[in-house]
Image (cartoon, rainbow, N blue to C red; front, side, top):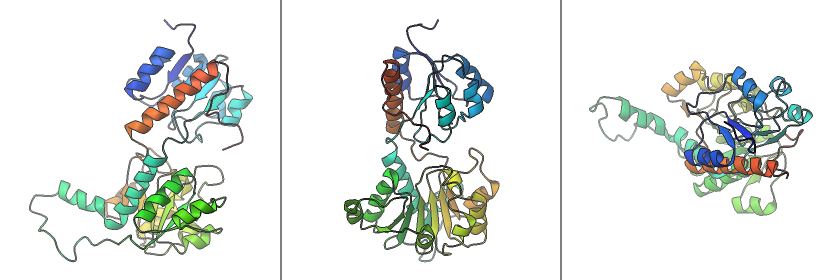
Length: 335
């Protein structure tokens, strides 16, 4: 039976064992042991009786669900960096506080971005797949013209979104000999620009037309939906590559697929997709053809980051029920 002195906390997905154990000590917690995503009905049921809901980015907490939430629900402590899956304004109108887990995924996501920047031009996935999936004698050894990719040293990287992750990507890119270019709502401080030898482009269109590799690192907001549109994809040179570890809907995925199929861009490295977990079958065919490297949204998937996120969720819950403002509260109108 739930301890009435502890808030009832419903967690929608399986979390690291150490995080779940700590939650069990502090709260009347209901865990998702089989890790199956909650249906909409199950989300509604949880929100009708919980004090705290701990969703993840795979849970859409829209205005309709929030409006039907029970009177006990006072906190949505999202286990996520982005908060585009929660209607924060609707929660505020209902008197529900929303928190997230920011600033713990930066280095891991930047690592994965850099891995894709390397993997796509150098055809790493193709080479690994050939050896793993072929007969032992199908590879005849080194050849001077076999599996030729493109050098990244000296190429121009264009970063779309120069926040924490974009800046971390830029530091890695500079170490690999890439020229750093970026577009952002606001120019970064002069010290950071000087450190990275970065060139700021006020015009995204002009930057896209001049770089060799595009890295998408901006959040998903109404303003960034299809920011990389069909028109902007057409600005890229045929030798250019695009990498996305941010959110799938920042790129017009259908338009990007057409560009890849028609050889109007050289390749893509994607860790996120517009309609995930569904993957466009045409993208899968492009991956088989060596024109795309596809990963299953694993940019932040390290044990360290997941534990850090869990710690932030716990701190947000404890602070809220101690009568204080949670450190990671998301204010309405800020996404």
